[in-house]
Image (cartoon, rainbow, N blue to C red):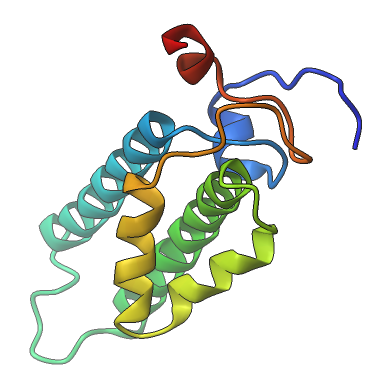
Length: 131
């Protein structure tokens, strides 16, 4: 792995599988994803798309597209969090297992990462400042 510093910004957080994310970054990203999903559903609801007894094809496709985009963004965040624990990013696949996925999602949010540099990059700055 290259030791080139990563510019930590929203694009890096949501569209990159490289690097590590602290617990704080993980929870802020999760909060933002929930807010985006809630906003998208509220926007669709206010447009009257959900007003009919049977959901229209457009409404289904819109909800499906929003869900898939947010899943991808969430996986990018989870992979970085898994990297912070020193594990391979593929461990994020546990998020797709029913019930275990919720437990793993919470585990990622509460488990402290490696305090020092690992194969996936340097420790997040917020952790380095504490020590």
